[in-house]
Image 1 (cartoon, rainbow, N blue to C red):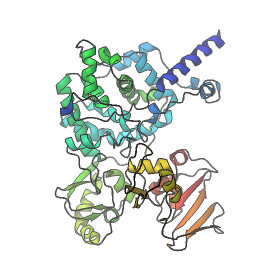
Image 2: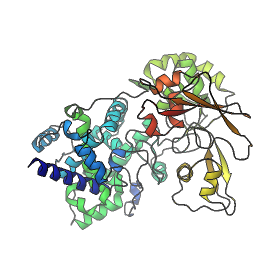
Image 3: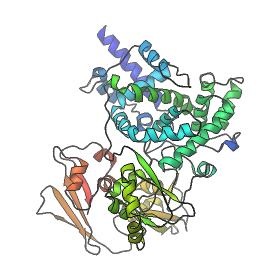
Image 4: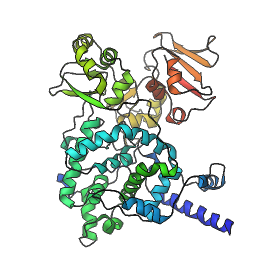
Length: 504
């Protein structure tokens, strides 16, 4: 009987995983302005930096067998009877009626069993982001509980970007950003700005609710666009609630609202599932904003306020360079509240020190740190050839330039980022890199460039190491730079013996 029950459990798990394979784009459809409400929206590809806990469900039967019967089986994690989940959801004080059903249960299991690591990281980030979201949402006349949408959209990552070009915590497409007055230029992308993007999302949701009179329909509209919601309403015979029209919505949107309800549950009842808050490396309790009219260097702001550059960047992810230029409108610089008086006292010194600073690219379009140069495509060149010449991959070229297929044309401008292991030297610079073994640090290998004097070392992780501890071993190296130089699969799960690349 035990074996039969285990087989049934395994079969059910496999069927769920297979069903989740259709969720390639759960996080965000390309939102469309609500004034184009009759437009039929086609789904955007998945968020490649967003909610992997939904998108990247492994449907390998071998993996499921290992997860069910191996040493990492999920039987040790708490689960509850359906009546418990139902009662907990009904206990929420919210304007949205939270329904418990099989679809919601699947996502609760997904969060609490399969994606525990990511949920714990988001719990830590939520301590910073959620109070900001709540204040802005309520001020704009929408429920504070809409903050949980950012869990689905970006996993609370302001640098998240979809292959279709949706960006930020709330995953705005360029056209929708323009409608909601979010600035996007070479210096600033307000789709990544913590405050401005949330204001845009609040405005969208308020407009959508005014049309549908139902928050779940407004949420569905945010995911698949109002055109698809209108079509589903019509096909249902005019019904105006999500669960009644769900079967007529795109597959991804059918799961979007259940995922939202499950996220709302898990972020409140995480402790019942033995989930723990994992504090982020950058931590701040409260922020204040300062209107900036003059050109300022982020490095100088950090220096004179005794902050790390990483903290300035963490609080101001919308900045695409190290400089806040003199905009027509003031830029709202975000600082820890306890640094407001320090900044105010040192403002003149910061302005003076910033006058001659050079503009450097902080992040590329998809969050890769480094400077870039523009390559003009020549006749006969392919993405593969360009990638080979520049020591990067085709996938990176497509991501950096938001290219959706392999077609390029002569004369096209292609951004190629340097540093951090992508394109280590300009292909026409003639720089050669030689490798030598460090004699002073037996756990690292050092490479240097004869023409630029830059150095790259390879550090072997020791037991007890953290990114912060490793960064502190080398003058001028930051945690963010180590992350940018290595794949997330490395720095998110440090293991002794692992080798990290560090640019000095």
